[in-house]
Amino acid sequence: MYQQFWIKYIPVIRILFKRTAVGDQILDLNRVDFEHAGMTRKAGYKFDIELVNGRVSNHIGGMPLAAELAAILLEDPAVQMLLTEHDFVISLNTRYQLSIKRIQVAT
Image (cartoon, rainbow, N blue to C red; front, side):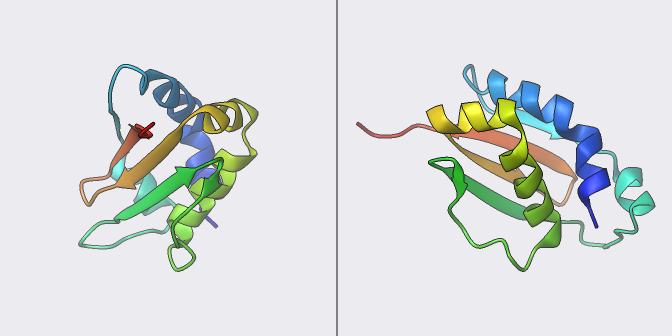
């Protein structure tokens, strides 16, 4: 349902994953894209996806928008390679900003 929506942003998201080496990254998504995809919500959309050891570690089953993004990311070879090396948190806030943070693992 939301796959086409996320496919549009995947090339930029890949780049932002790589740039997390120097700091957290934010992508401003186009609100109009949400409306064209049939997604309208006055309060906006909000979710967190925790990617640990190459897998989603938190429950996102009730959030189809997050689940579709996670599925596309886990299928992408470039993202898969990064996920084997680092853990990440991807968040969407109500202002349609997607943030990608690399989790620093304590040694």
